[in-house]
Length: 483
Image 1: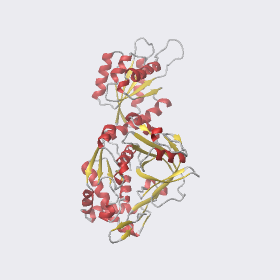
Image 2: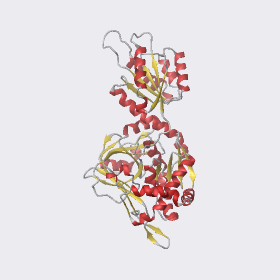
Image 3: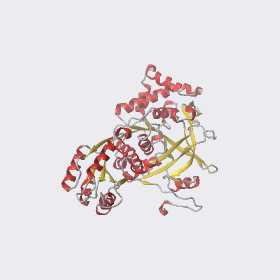
Image 4: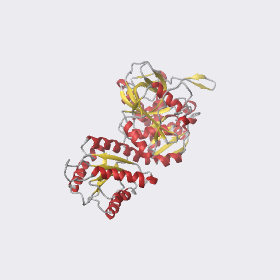
């Protein structure tokens, strides 16, 4: 289901001008304003512009005031002509991301009409040299709005910064803490808030969900049971027995999210549900993500953060997966998890409910199976596999395609990913595996349908997050301090 992004991006625009250049600066600026206005609904942003061209410092201060009054998130600074270098120093004092924009010269000979690119070049170097202590990120743009060089770069920026804006305002819950033994998922909520702006609420106990789930009468959960059954191509007997408990957990987490106003939930699903409710929550997690409630398994906050930022950019569910096998014969990796299937990601739309593939030791009962899990094989599709790591200071980024649903794989939610690219560049499986091990990546990876690599690379750049470096395979020991 479509994920409702709560906040649209606010894009502002100013035009820098100079009396010494003879080109139609106002005409060019007004053309750009008109063309950007036409994109608002298509690209889902709000647009504000400063009506008059900026020539003097006083005009720059007034433009800054107007844009701040509108709380713009991103400001396109168009060099409608070469302009004084003092102006960019004023505009970069805004609490907004900056885009520097140059336009083509309308003629190829005679008097230089705008000297626009040179003006943008100077502003970039002022930010990088004179203002270097402020560490101000910016993105450059060139061309008229309909030109491929401008519009393709602008689309990526709008998508990326809308995700950043919503992530900054997000409220995330951790229920029951991190899964037992998964200490590689440790997080410091202060660092998350500093880098992403996201607020983490980590003090919710598992009992809050258990008690809420057990409080419903059958009428309150029957619609969920019916819908899950309708969406399942088959249901194993043990899974059938667990359908009521599964629906109770789904409703409990839906109501919990609504009551507290959370944007996403990290759930300690293992082993608490087995021990305290004699079930597994895998199918419930899959259902919640299918319904647009971003939910991560095993209390993984950084996995959840990555799922959430990608969910802001796609209408399909995002999921948390393990990398469970690799195959050098066809340069593919197996992405898998217990059973968090979603019909709109599954091959032929088929999801089936089954017992968990691994039984669990229960006191006095030996090894006992639990259910339900929602199994599926990924449909052929492009995919993005990513994770914020190293306390949010780095990012793992992989893209590829699920192309062979018929290839043998393990029980659960799974698919073989090939045509691999790491940080947008092709990578061999052996180098990928070596990179993961040498860079000490966590074993959870966030999945999103489609190729979001450009948007994630841009998000990382705006937030000062470093993409992890590829480490080519070697027979000798490699350690990250050598990178």
